[in-house]
Image (cartoon, rainbow, N blue to C red):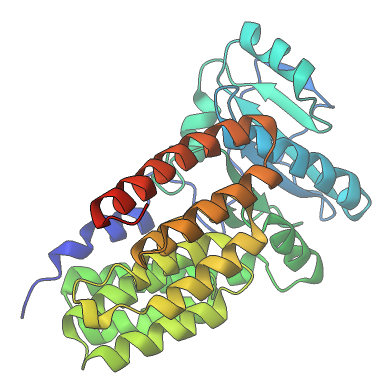
Length: 336
């Protein structure tokens, strides 16, 4: 049987390290050197009422700045329901205090001076990207790991209504373990079965669809299989900007030109942009692939209108590049 070697990198995203924090586990011990905002809190001591959200951040991380206002709002609106946000950073205190003057946090945060807490939490899924968040249900079990900028409020609501809990987290963990075992056996049928279970449990998670797509592209019956998966992916991820962006890039990134689904890519990128400012860059890329640099520039102009000052400067740099590319194209074709 042909080896599925090119899936190794994707499976590395799903597999944890030997001592990793995983779904269904309790919170690891934290090691606060100093509490810098809010009251002291301990997510290792569940009380059947509190929903803990533990977040990792840094002063040098632009997305972390964006997450602060979101977390402030969530803490305020869901505090009465038991939400308690606890964030930490490994930065030096000399960097933190000036940062907090400009970006005040209305929730608890501490300095993880020795990095012990960072190691325990960030081993959870072999990632080192920040901001990163870990959501624990009222029983103290880890039920979600992800980017706090990505539909976090929906996850909190699911914990509150009971649809996301420790038992479901263990189901996801079991299905993921089945997928890993099937991969090690190179058993395609079993892999597809495990992927179906995972997609049903976490319909907006792009990792599962990415693996599914690679399998169908390599071993499926043809374009119809891939198109069907991409459409299912779109329906499942309608409210998840991150997943929609990944879908858009996959839909226009097929190796064979006749397998690329430009309309689906455009629909996914437009939908993602309606949900998240940053997703506008995916729409810019799709328009570029369609040969419509003018629409790429129009999208960047829209981002300029919507963005904060720091974001507008970054977008302007991208816009300048696309404007030069458009003018060069006109010169080469003689269309001044």
